Amino acid sequence: MEQIHNDDNRKLTSSEEKLAGIADRGEGERRDEWHLDPPDSCDYCHRSLSNSIFFVDGKVKGSFQWGNMCAECFFTYGDAIRWGAGQLYQQVGSNEWLMVGGFPTDEPEPF
Image (cartoon, rainbow, N blue to C red; front, side):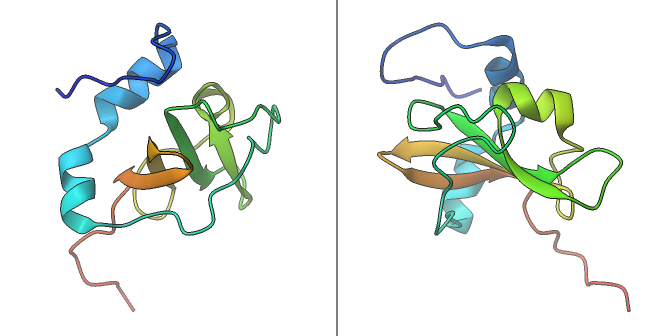
């Protein structure tokens, strides 16, 4: 597993550690899929994402609603990291967010 670093060398939260275990930065770089209009803050706790390592653009458990969630709020409100449920993004530069989980499937969409 790739070592995840943050700019201020703080210890990762348990939620960030869990997302780091899901993240596949190599696949993200291969696919080259970026969030084109990343959020400034978590939709639930309103914490700034500027110093975050991850955020999830995902579906809320038991709902049709979607939101942008910090790592901690994802494990409280989020449904899953997979296509159709949630995309995991990792900050790789100042406000540059690479998709590292929840990639589109290679399976054809059912009609």
